[in-house]
Image 1: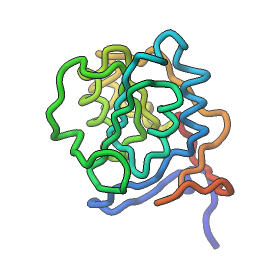
Image 2: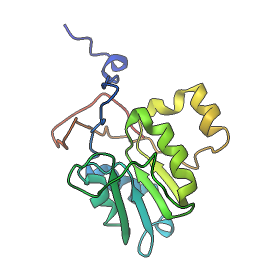
Image 3: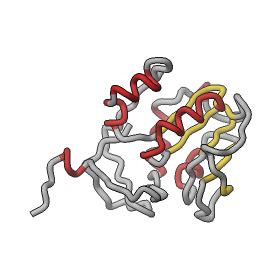
Length: 174
């Protein structure tokens, strides 16, 4: 019998070389923009980079709020440009925002890479447990505390390789 406790169900083990392809449902991106990012810091005339765009679910929703959406991913999923965000060449303050659902095992690296690129802000979709690490506190939050932490009150089901409106999850995201 499967152990269905939250602690067990919230774990996901991906292979080391996995692309960690868990697309963001578009409604979750819209919730971020409608309820968390103030109207004056998003919108027309502003740019956003989505560096882990996958098949474009998050990038397409970002396009509803920003004039310029730059979408890329290390793997060619058929949407955006194929580019290695962590190893790519970018200019400081090149974008107004960097908003992404990064591969979870690389989320900290994505944050460090994104901070100097964004003029206004960086928003990442991560598991809630991301903020619970002492090491991560020392490496990120002590020097650059988040201006907002936005816990999803509704669970955001993310299914490997696809968006599934009928999926459910025991994992909390913020």
